[in-house]
Figure 1 (cartoon, one colour):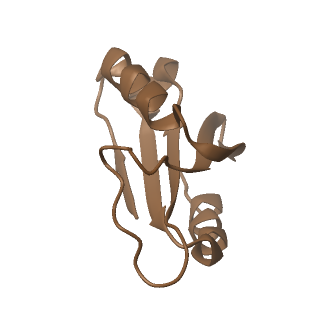
Figure 2: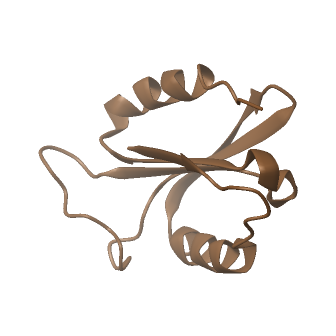
Length: 106
């Protein structure tokens, strides 16, 4: 699990778009979930990465590891926020509860 944000006019959208497409290619159980952080929308994609995915971690314990990638839109660069999770399915609700409590600071 991790969280972060960009500063000022940070824009790595070309790179991020390419990485996102690569991550979702071949993924299963793809689910989109949107959260409101004030007037900014945070979009999260939850999925099971394909077994051949370059960045996939080996399973730890019982069951596969899920991935959740969250990010605000490119147009909100001054309020850019991202979060990620990889772990067991039963831990995903705890991650989303943390996301629901995020407050953007201006």
